[in-house]
Image (tube, rainbow over all chains, first blue to last red; front, side, top):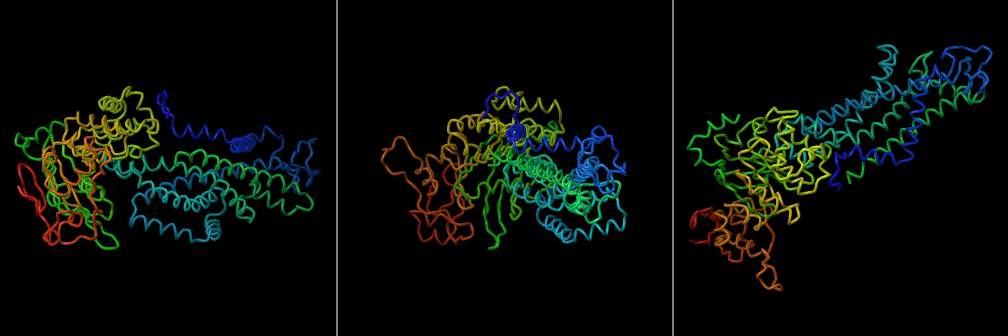
Length: 288
Length: 331
């Protein structure tokens, strides 16, 4: 143990160092950052608008002369631009819905687990009931009642995903509250809410961060799935799910319409999974 | 805060006990019915006392003090009376008891490796206590925390505040925990086996640190040696009851209860021949659930007679300032 470290070497900094040593994870961060930056900087990367129609180029294969690196779709729109606009929607849905599920799930799970007993049982039964709601039915119902909007997709996905988070956090909290430092905090007169906030939640961050990185790809998949079914975003906006669904229809004649958005989605999901694994490995040694 | 407490301590308070426990019982509700961990314990702690509570694992010594502080497991229930000053700890609302913990009564736990939150800096964990009980925060709290670290013998306290628990040795961590306990200047400090998890050399340092505190203290231990070097009075507990109590010197020179005698004989001694077998007490302590009508120690006692198995011996005064719960002991 470092006896004369000038400043506290936090567990987080140690974890960061181990994470930096994980090549797959670092490469994944690079891939993800490239996609995200490209999505933000579409106007700089391509002169075409997302709804500009090239009447002479319908479902044209990739060509660099007119700067259509991904080709054009069946309506003559540049696929490169549409894919990157799709990235905006897909990444945003993934991140925002994950944050929503994180906020609700961590609070709910930690309180339920720490209080325990009857409160815990009641709170978890509510989660069970929500679990039992069929997800698609729930989304269609929302769409019918409130009309389609991106915001609604965030709400729908966040409202479903927090259930898993709450269960994981509750389980972790149950084991954490047996730890001696929680007992010690109680013995020093720290109030329950402060124990949850200062002593339980920071210790939860490890598993929670890992789970969150695995939640983002799942939500992107969910959104793609909804869009594929026609329940997602509407034209002229596009998400990866929409593009893949369109591409799948013309897979015989113009396979690039499926390949490029599909490739981007696959690369993103893989990267997020590698990053999640990397974070878990980086945080683990201290739990052993 | 300070001044009101000074007023509350009238001259007569010097002779009144800091802690006066009568007929304390702790029961745990289990699937097999109620299990008694502590079966009617009474003792007093005077101001300035250093009381040792001696007993093996399962004797109820730890549960006794967790009960006083309202820290029993949810299925535990404590009855009896425990006067701390004028207030009954067992009759207090949970909130009032929480405010008292860490402020007027503090406890130091056994294992310094796990009693600190691994994700928070030492400084944060110390100032938290001041924030809660004294509403002191920021720089003032940090200064007080650093001053307290210096008082418990940690060099360069300012710098240590920025460290995480895993960067400190076991002995250092125990010092930090003691500093946390002392931050609000408690009237009573309970140390639950504070040295058990430490190296022998560090044990000595921690005990010396505790000995140097002008404070009423209760030391829970299973180690006669620790007791001898630290306490002026002691209770010996067996199966949830006090079997003997008195000044530590008397307990050493003239143990009256066969259990105390057995414990004393079981201490390895340098002046005995090396090849001599270490004396032990045969058998195991009884399960809390199965208790016969007689003395709980009778099945392991070499001198037990019929009466021991039939009738529970009560704690009675014997000799000077000593009590014992044994039919066979005589003055």
